[in-house]
Amino acid sequence: MRHLLNPLDFSVEEIDQLLDLASDIEANPAKYAHVCDGKKIATLFYEPSTRTRLSFEAAMLNLGGRVLGFASADSSSASKGESVADTIRVISCFADICAMRHPKEGAPMVASLHSSIPVINAGDGGHQHPTQTLTDLMTIRSLKGRLNNLTVGLCGDLKFGRTVHSLINALSRYTGIRFVLISPPELRVPDYIIEDTLNAKGIEYKEVENLDEAMPELDILYMTRVQRERFFNEEDYIRMKDCYILDKKKMELARDDMFVLHPLPRVNEISVEVDNDPRAAYFKQVQYGVYVRMALIMTLLEVEKPC
Image (cartoon, rainbow, N blue to C red):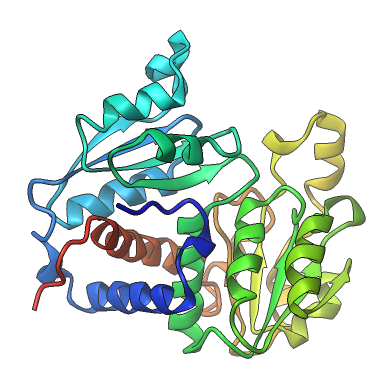
């Protein structure tokens, strides 16, 4: 039995196989409509989510399986003080696989230690969000045709953004990757990621504050929102939230083959006028997330690929 707690739990070769499977699902959805007949996924979401929770549920339904779970801690026995360890022991009696989102870093790992079914980390605090990373990798590969030799700009909240941290770790395993880290000083990438990943692996990167100057050199621009829930006081959030807003004028500075990604939800960091630009890929990204999660469910449940 296997879990997915961190994007690095899968080797590069395994990720490539997973993305190949996801691409085949995209091309031939009807072929996979019943591969998980009789299987159930439990979605254990201790904090709010729209895309991730519904994406997992859509993925399992598309495979012919069924869904159970809860959408907030208040609607679970966690409100009565039940531990994650006890919850997963109970859920293991009901479901074949589970996806867990939790505000505390490491909670899905704790669950995996007490679970008799595969556990997927659907986001734990500011730590990891591996299925979003797999989604990002599929989006980039589908749009650019490769996951190497790319200049990737990461913009906005690079300090608290778990999607950014996971993507840096994942892309750093491919050759020819260069990062442009675009943020105010207060929201820079944490030192441990700079030291343990970028410097340790000799990955080329630079930290800048000006988005306009970075635009012309990028293959991918990954925008993030400034997250109110990750700040300790409202004053800091208000001061930072409008630091970077991508609009039509800024898009004119970019290459014709540069694509914009965003893990969503957005607040105002991408103007709605950008939505009609063919380089705006963040809604395509959502659809790719369903295919990736379908492939992941099949892989962890060891479901045989149909002929």
